[in-house]
Length: 115
Length: 115
Image 1 (cartoon, rainbow over the protein chains, first blue to last red):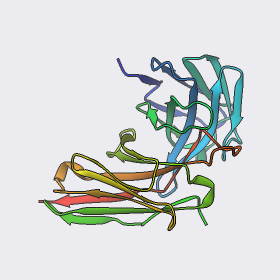
Image 2 (image 1 turned 60 degrees about the horizontal axis):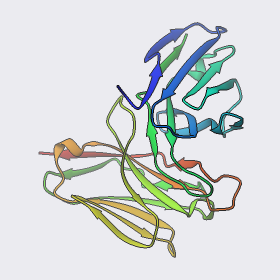
Image 3 (image 1 turned 90 degrees about the vertical axis):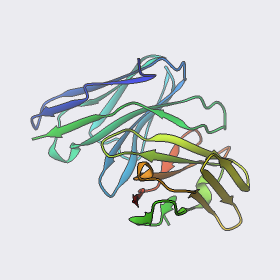
Image 4 (image 1 turned 180 degrees about the horizontal axis):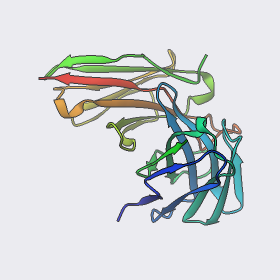
């Protein structure tokens, strides 16, 4: 089984619908992140969480919300999907503590299309 | 200046050559650096991390960090067609800053190794 699992892998949804992307991990990492990737724009941070009670906005959080249900689970919601939220979404985890930075482990991604 | 900026590419090299990928960064991301490889439609995979000035070698890969000039590079020796991918440079925020624990990614450089 993958260390970081994202569901669904692919999703097509209609404008205005609510959709949830789920992420679970078996790494035992405290830090979890949601990024979106668009051609030419690279990876951009949506939300991040350093523990269950710590949720922070990233650079492009508008239109998104998150829930950290447990250390191992971090979900991303689009309350009312719009076409420009069509992208590849990645969940990632990190073992970093304090001021240290460590590399991320990424999930396999969710390809979301809003029509 | 973007926090992390990569040479735009795409880069094409013949099989067996050295591929050189470069990345510059701003003062806000000068603690730790990472190189990821991403195959089309797949998630990024961590291939190198570097924290201090100088070179770090791992097999055919060498990461170089020059903090005075604020650049980090990745050399791939004896390039193979299987190295064809997008390479992402990422930097971690300064210790003590409010952005610690997050990575900022460059936009990626597409590398093609042709037989």
